[in-house]
Image (cartoon, rainbow, N blue to C red; front, side, top):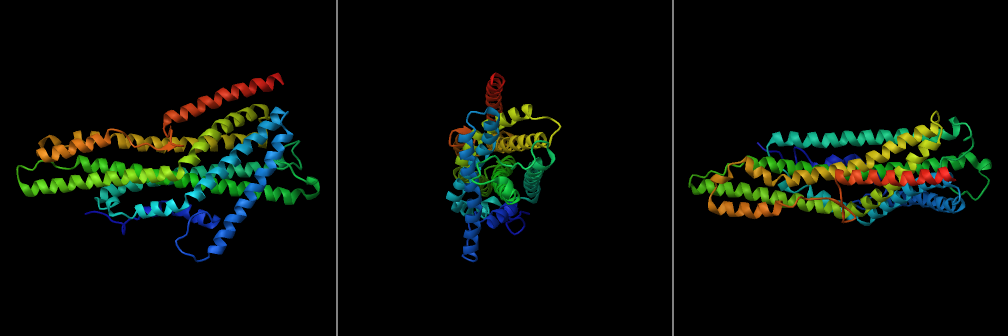
Length: 388
């Protein structure tokens, strides 16, 4: 017995992320109902974000000769720029999300035994758990971030975010504080939601590759010269070929939609991880600011690591599809089927990869390179600080 979209709809895997982005006004709607409210919500979020960006740019110019202050401002500036670029890229490719949703309704993604459904659910639930943990770390980081001005000595009446304010902050401290915290919360929840949405879609692709591998292994290629058996074998194999093509196209749609945003995320992560590590060594350890920096460092590491991890899984699962033939009795197949097998094997020789900016492969190797680069810049920054 096989499952269908009525038993399990793959589009529900990212229903939470879709709802959050719809509330923010950034996820595309299929209907025009409440479209004005949808647009207003998006404009309000963008207004908060770009106002804070302008404030940081001016502050960077003011602090250009102070390494410690410049580092702190640069930390939040790079995070904010990355978020805005990812969001702009998301808005630009937003209609592709509807196409991705439609792809997940294709019958080729369903129609497999229920034991495969358990495997699919297991991988998706694992990704959801990772997403929840990531959200919790973001919330804890935000909480610590907001408490720094109240609990750290020397930080009283200071603002959470570095930035130029065109008026006396002490006279309007609490409204300014609330404005900055709202801006940070918007950045955190939209940014993390886009990340988790991407991870969910990649997980669906890798799970479908795993299902395809199992289906290829279980095909009985022995026909014993009976035409009816040969026809059944050919139909089962052709179904696997179509399934492979559909999953590959699905991966390419994900890459086309999110690739540019992931590229800037990787680039800025090198700087942010470096600067965060640097600030952790110059900030007193028994302080709220150190706790925030440690939690923020964990968030950034998790964010980059998950992109690389899920991209690596897609690469390895797609690369192992050709090996699945050797787990079956393909050698007992007819000559005609063997020719089709040879053509399909040639297609599966090159693994399916997700890239950032079309040339950086999402893999664990890339993650180690990011960490090495961050450490190199960290050493340079520490040297400059010691000399100054």
